[in-house]
Length: 357
Image (cartoon, rainbow, N blue to C red; front, top):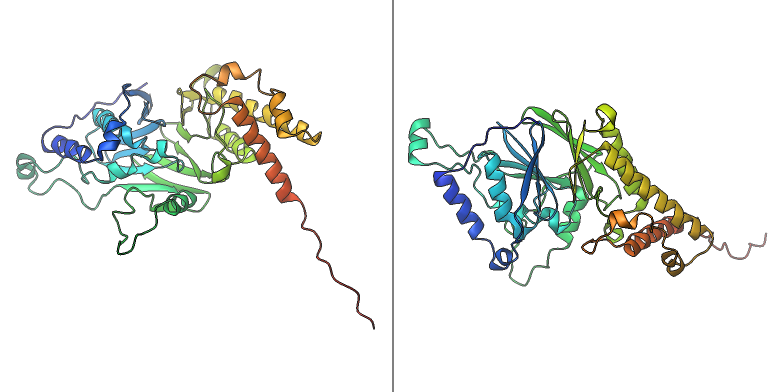
């Protein structure tokens, strides 16, 4: 894999970064994970940071830094330090794959950083003859409109005399999109954001870095654990399978089906197309097993007792797993039965007694 030369942050820029992070609430700093983060080059302009909550994808180049997801709020200081090992250029974009706090928690802290973290030291200003920071290039946070809608709906109501404003909305993805995809050109390559309807949630996005041949998948794909199908936030097993099939359309394997397009999952290890195929097949098989018992009028308790995932549990369940086997099966069951109920035709309205002629 090609490695980039790093631009370490020094001087005023480092002071500004540390000061901004130190201003975070004490409770946030107290929750700082003890384990160090790990940063790996993926390929092209793209890196991945593991251990900040959800995985964070980092694209770097002359235009600045683009992040896919921002980790937990408690991980922000450590994540910022990892990013600064890769580039001293400003963080220009964050693309949120969905609304969960382990993927959007760093939005607000990053929103408080200067437009250009290299700052304006006297020697830099004298050499350039002008200010170095660029206020016309602020941080831009992108997500599907359903993410913004759900995040704003979760805000506490304004108290009497309280005024809303930019501070209340700090860290919100105000550059939302509503079409099937959104694209831009950044750091010398096309970056394409695809909406995956009603998959893990109803606001999921996957991000393709076309030149680097890397896809950031969010929590649609978690290779070491069962998927979290968040029914309450619009997720469904049908949408999950559709999204995984789309990932397979975007990925092109190299020789002997290894390598080629790399996929950064929402949690877990770096992967390629073969890992997505295995994961997709597991979800489809479990879906079919649950559907078969639903067709036989089995109750949820009976379906759970059948242990339909027992041949997959050693691969996808550990003591630390967020989604246990029963939870996955229940989510599939509720998704299928909800979809079946929604597909039922509405009962015909009673027309009342016929009129006499």
